[in-house]
Length: 281
Ligand code: OAD
Image (cartoon, rainbow, N blue to C red; front, side, top):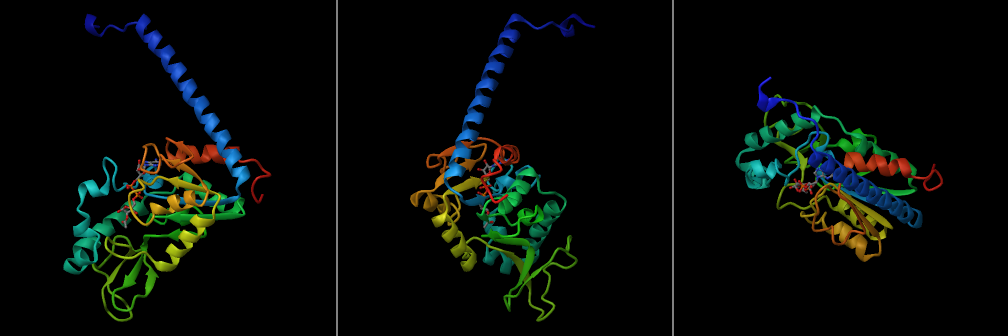
């Protein structure tokens, strides 16, 4: 073995570094334990829970977010792919992009964090799940009542009649797909820039946010309106705000507790600590 690559024993410096790391990790863990205890007390005091999720909750499943380092809006121009004008200008191009995204989503699975939220729907007597995600992962994980603010990528809508049907064909045989009833083009049933959110769903989301005791904001950059205003409305009405996101967001200063961590790691930890007497079961 050449002298330069001879295996060295730990230097006094690396031992010292290791010691500092242990102290750092221990203090982070005790901070996390403190936060988890605090959260359980908050949940004891307020039984009505609302949860807002964003693209970050599906990141650990392998679905790209929009604004992160490899986010979709860093690689693609929203105005060429996610507006009604773009669709009517070039429906094939827009459908090819959605078909590609459906391919990614269809090949991945929801993770433990999605499943915890599905369990909470049964555990807490008052629980509303609001999502900005179109991937359908919450339903696939077992959530039954999901307010999908931005629609669902597995649904198509007739551009003529407005009928919405499920469509899971992937890849699509024909792009754009056509309505079997009237022959008009079908579009993805998602909300594009410049479009309104489905009004009933939005009303329900406002009502849940205005009346909850605790609101979780999980995996959202809190930039896109009106979703970003929901936790602010909840806070205004006295709810505690719990954020789960590895990065700080504009919501962090309003949050009562910020878990700077991944949803798939933190949600199971919270779930493990929920006492039996707290929820429905
Ligand atoms: P963004 O892509 O804007 O933000 C994702 C957030 O998730 C970021 O704040 C990340 O730090 C965080 N994140 C990343 N990995 C995470 C993890 N493992 N656990 C928890 N958080 C994590 O996504 P949204 O806020 O959902 O709208 O974006 C909102 C809307 O903007 C989308 O619904 C979409 C987009 O334009 C439409 O298409 C209409």
